[in-house]
Structures are given as structure tokens and as C-alpha cells.
Image 1 (cartoon, rainbow, N blue to C red):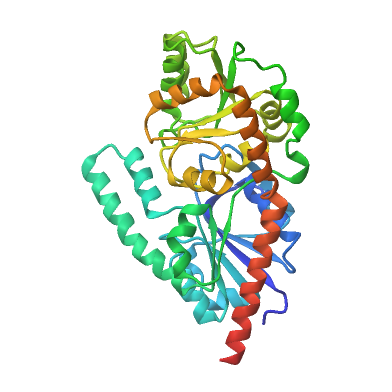
Image 2: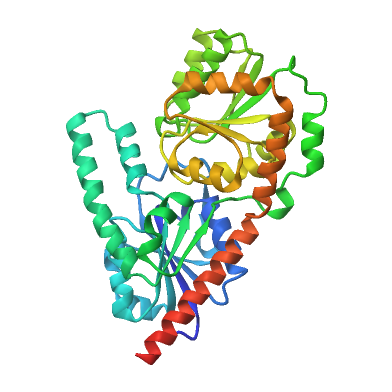
Length: 402
């Protein structure tokens, strides 16, 4: 039954189908599956639910379904059955805990197919997201109660699975005792050949004295959840205190128009530059490696954003709000500077302190790069694939004994 060693991935992002056999997906998804094919000894099927609206990710692209390097099946997760898994010769299912997939570990048990959940968001983070995105207090309370109920179901699903892969330290700490086959990884798109070098850091920091502008950066979706609205509060406080700085903001989102208006209204044009969404590999990443001293992260929730590893891969240290994701990676890597949540004035104060300690920033740049070198795109997916195969082999041998 499992001779094909087919890995079935249930992707939580939805797919938008277009005419003429095309589909809208994120480039990140395609690149991740392509990388996984290098280490997974077998075929890969990606199952996704359909959407009519698409999603708000910055890297969406249109692909020909027939030319994808994996099989894509657009299907409601409610229709996944033991028979369907057998039809695909599935030897392992990779799922994501949440209300659309909490039932999957039970389906896999009925099918005799091992299941690994990939977790990202803790209950605390999901509550933070609900709080930031919900204005109506009654609706907010309902969402909080719903998330708490989902957490009970989610924990049961994880305990029922054969393995667990945790993106970032928050869910690793929360769910480690639920599943004996757990592993920790950090999400990143940075391959070995893209990493900054020691020479990059030396050249970037050469002759950068205290009287030269400190070059700050933020990249990501320009939405409240990512704290984009606090970036300009930080910039205004820096200007008020007479700091010499340049802030570059890369991204797009709901707050973009407001941010342009605020920059104009407060005459920040000379120190705050909106970059739009440059090509990640050919424009943005080289720019960061060559020109940025410090990444400013005002994330108001603890999602395990790939931003952290990708920034460190440039040899750029991070100053950020002490959400649980940044707290975890900062402690583990011994890098960066944490500021209390929702305190943009304290963020500005710390940035000013650092601007007078350029050698401290430089030393932290090297430490950030050292951590990123251990967690590249290739190393991360190789470790994940090896964990998947171990869990699958162990699960199947146990089922044969039983």
C-alpha cells in the first residue's frame, strides 16, 4: 500500500483556481515543497482548500497546475477519508492544527497512516491576533472563547498524532509534552548561497561613526498585527529626540495609505523611506545586507515569522517587542534587544542608546549571522524530512507489530 512513499501535505493557505488550468499560490509554498523533494524519498501531494478571494500574502504568483513540481489537489478537508489517503498511496500526512484540520490525526489513525502536525500559533498568539483585529468588544470576547475551545481540540489532535514539528519556540514549549516525537525548527527562505558573509558585515560597518545616520529597516505586511502603525510612532519619537537616522519600510497592506499620509503630515520624508515590495532575492535581500544596521520589529503578537531568521541571515541584528516568538529566538541565539510590548517610545529610546554604541551593533551582527548559518533553508528542510521519515518508519513498524 505504501510502496510509493507519498507524502501528503495539507496546506492551510487556500488556493485560488483560475481559468485555463492556472492557480494562485505563494512562491514560498512552491519553493518549500521543491526543497522538500530533495530530501523526501518519494512523491509529494499538496492538498488545499479553494478560495475565491485569494490571500493577502506579498509573494503570490500564478502557476500552471500541470507544471507544478508536485501534485496539487484542491479539495475540502472535510472530504479527506481513509479511502482517499489509500488512493494516493499516502505513507505520511503533514497537517496543521486548527479548526479545519484538527480531525485529520483521527482520519489517519483509521487509515493506518502516520500523521505529523506542524504548529505555529499558540493560544496566546491567536488571542493577540484576535484582539488586534477585532474592534467590537463583544465580538472580541466571542473570538477569545472560540479560540480557547479550539485549543482544547488542537491539543487533543496533537496528542493523537504520530509526530509534531514546531515552527518557533512558542508552540514547542507549549506542546512538547503532548507528543513524544517533537522537533523545533525556524522558518526561513534563505539558502546557503544567499547568506551574508563576515566581509559583508565588515564593509557595511566600516567607518560608520556615531555622527552618521543609523539605518533602520522594517519589512513585512503593513498591518496592525505586524505593528506597522507603531513604526512611525518610533520614527516620530526619534525625530523629536534629535536622533540621526534613516528608516526604510518595505511591504504593503491596509495601513500603507495611512503611513504615506503620516509621513507627509509630519514631514518625515527625509528620514523615512517607503520601498514598496521589491523583488526579495534580487533587490531587497542585497539591499539589506549592504545598507542596514538594525531591524525594527514592532510585531504585536508572537507568530514565528520568517522575518527573524531572514534578517539575521543578512547579518543584521533585531530590536523588537518582546512577543513570545522573538523572545524565544532571542534567548536561544543570544542576539537582539527586546523592548516591552506596545512601547514605541521605549523602542526609540533603546535605538538612540545603540546609535552611540556602533561596535555593540557590529558585534551583534556577527552573532546574528552565526545563528542563521545553523538554520539555513537547506539545513532546516533536511532536518524536517529526516524527522518525517523517522516518524513514518517508527509508526509503521509499531503498526506491524500490533
